[in-house]
Length: 382
Ligand SMILES: Nc1ncnc2c1ncn2[C@@H]1O[C@H](COP(=O)(O)OP(=O)(O)OP(=O)(O)O)[C@@H](O)[C@H]1O
Ligand SMILES: [Mg+2]
Image (cartoon, rainbow, N blue to C red):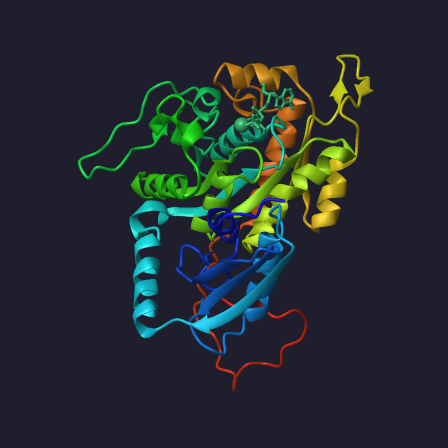
């Protein structure tokens, strides 16, 4: 069996994230060496910031787990050393450089990634309609199309202009008729060039893009992720440690295991999963007869498994598709249609699950004066 190359191993190591710095050990320059033995044994030395680093076992497991996925690897050995002072300085610089600057997403209260391990389950349709529903219910929202391979958000929200750049060389999101602010990575991808974007190049491009868009005050920014857990999704999860995930699945129990991959990625990066939306959940004829074309129960199964709420079950609906195709979300045009109601309910579930600003407490009694507390303690306001 052929041995893996150092490059292949490095690619695998990109998935090993320092849980404190929230970046890959490759990007952080913490991979000291990779040694590939004839027998298929791979030895990786990881450099830590301090000798007593408490997350050693996390790295040990994550390195072994990811590298052993490669064909030809028979065994993985993980060793540790400590970064020199100079290397620590470089690390600091890397951290400073890679941080998304204040300007970019500072005005966005909640970043929500709409994801699924699977294609064609309705991620883009849900993103567009959820953003429209949130905006309509008084929560200004934006939709960012991150699908470099097949972007659809601008069309679904009725935007057919290209964005402009302001005097500060920032890209301005586009206004859509429903009030949702729209941006797409696709605007900046030359035809066909997306297919050659991989690994570090893609990471850089996405980072640059996130930095360069001037979002106004938004309560929610919904990211339409490409299907699966490829480079784009990984990069976003890494660059946006504050992001929360909504996982879309179809109802057949078989789909739910694939959809779970999206959730697993979120977990890997320690990102919160807000809930599951089951889409294409049965079809009801005008006479009220219901057909479960794509089976039943997948959404509930997945949400039970992830221990998160099932935010909604959106039925198969021709008008939902038609309105998406015509650039005018169904939740706006026909808010009482069954599919719209389900999506609006999911939007309310998102609102309920995301922190609202708490009223500032006027005065807090000091512990000495405070009456004895019983029952549930109040949340700590930071
Ligand atoms: N509930 C629904 N009822 C009817 N049609 C739907 C429904 N949800 C989505 N569709 C249609 O299914 C197709 C796929 O949906 P969509 O593009 O939103 O999926 P996606 O998960 O974003 O796909 P991709 O993985 O390719 O990005 C579209 O034509 C869309 O209009
Ligand atoms: Mg899509």
